[in-house]
Length: 169
Image: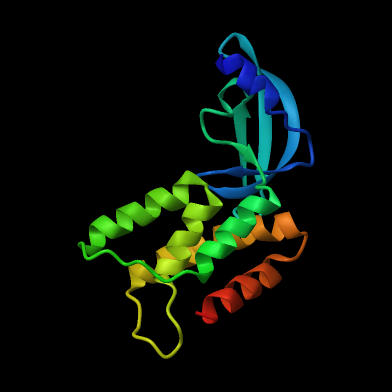
């Protein structure tokens, strides 16, 4: 059954994709390479911002969570989450931080939007801790990059749009 699903996920050179642990990248090539005596078909994904290249075996692409950029409907759901009220659980920060990291690494725009919403601080509110700020910026960056590709705008414009949505609580 997995083979049927895997064959429906087709990636072409030039496609933008989301790798959950690293965010948005661009498929630069689909290459066959001989590794440890067996030939593998690899998806070569470049992350220009991090100056990193990943080679993902085609057969493992789905298992690692590699996916195409979200549809507009999913992005609209994520933007809807940003408009909601922040939900901060009354548990220790270390536990919350772990939950936020898991949501970011899930690669789901809606889950990432929840993190951005929950950690967003208006200028006139209390300061954030360093680790809170780091997680917030990572989540905002991931969401903005995917939104930028989805809407065909620059990453900076996408960030401005997301921040304007957050500011209108």
